Each structure stands twice: as C-alpha cells, then as structure tokens.
Length: 316
Image (cartoon, rainbow, N blue to C red):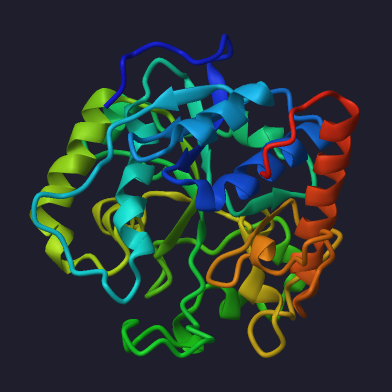
C-alpha cells in the first residue's frame, strides 16, 4: 500500500485522504485548524494517483507533507451510484497498513478542529498481536455513526431510525455525552463513523481487514465503515461525539439535546453542501447552517495568514 517510509519524523501523525481538488480547500483549512489549536503532531496528506499535480503543488507551498498510497477498491463491491463518495472511502482503511508509524489518527478532509485533541495520540488501544488473535475490545477508536437518517435518504437501511441511534440514548444525560461514548457492544448501537479513526497500524491487521472486505464488500452499504463495524463488532473504543461532531447532530430535531458548541473539538461536515460550496467570490458565507460559518471564518483566517506569509495565491 505504501513504500514503508515516513513522510515526517514523527511516529504519530494525523492523516487525511485526498483524491481530487474538490476537497483540497477542506484539507488546507483542516491543517490550519490543527496548527491553530497547537497540535504537536503533523498532518500527512495521503494522496492517490488521481490527485492532480496542482494539488500537490498547493500542499508543498504550505509545507504539508504528502504520502502516496494505492487506491483501495474491492474486486467485487457494492454499487454506490446513489452515493459515489463511498468508492473513495475504501482507501480510508489504508492507515491500518502504515506501520512505519506507531499511531495514526485518520481525519476526513471535511473537518474543522475547534479544540486541541492531541490526547488521541496516546489513547490506549489493543496490541496488534491480540487483534490478529481475535482478542481484545480496543482494536481502534472512533465515534458512532448517527443512524437517524434525518434527510430520509431512501437507499439507507430501513432500521436507520432515531430509536436505533447511539446518540438518542444519550439525550437524558448530555453532560456524560461530552466525555463518554455508548458501548458499541450494546444492542443495535455498534456502527462507527469512519471520519475519525484512531489506529495502531499493523500490516497483518490490515491484511485481516482487506480479506474481510474482499469477501463481504458486495453487502457493505457504507464501505469502510461497514467493514470495520462488522469485522470488529463490539471491539472498538467509542469516542464521545465531540471528536467527530457530525454537523447534523446540531440540527433541530436530531441530537441538539447533547450538542454543546463550546465542548466540540472537531466538526465533521458530512453530506452536501460542504461549507466551501456556500461562499461568494469575496469569501462571504451564503448558507444558513451556523456551523458552516465556522468553517468559512477559519478558511478566511487561513487565507489571510497565507497572504501575510508569502504563500503563492493558487485559488485554494
């Protein structure tokens, strides 16, 4: 999957997958927000061969390290024509293979860090040898997926309803929801969101994941998320929502009982539109979702900083 070399000196890194320039502004602002909140660890952009030279030049201009990976796709997979983004999502399993690093925390490029979360770099996980042997309950760490389906997408599973959602079960104790996730071994609540994954990379664990992917992909509705949720059912660490705060949780009628703006560490701008789609030519916010305005403000701060520090204007 990779050449076995590190893109940086640190053996603990944030990574994010990038396959095209459509998400590049998101990646650049994610990197800016990590630095703004004084993370001690670098972000490494994992790029595939579809990522253009203009994107690589933009990363280099900002000193963001890049590492090439192979595009991961099962030999026989599910038809994602209803949600083409899931074709790229298989490659988000790659951090499990990057054993030149002791710890990888994978982030989606449509995220914005609001508070330091470096503690994820030292979170206790199972030793890979135990994972390979089928032991342990801390294979990786992640946040739950919200299975409420607030947009009522017809191709989502029929049991994706509020009663099945882990976050629904936290409404009665919002303070606890800021610091604890629901045990994934409980009932129907064990489905993770792949936007943030805390991983101890190991080649043999990766092979275990890929083998499972190849034999089950045709039935996997949500690509990487389905594979990890099924293969390691009940064996992952549930992070509180604050580390992967899906923007939809904040919406009225979804999970606003637990959402606290001042406690969120990392916002995840799932679904369309993305915040960068809601700006005019002057960088003004044109949307209605207040959380999107946070990203636009951070992006404008980034552009201002770049202008003051000699970064070549390249449109990103």
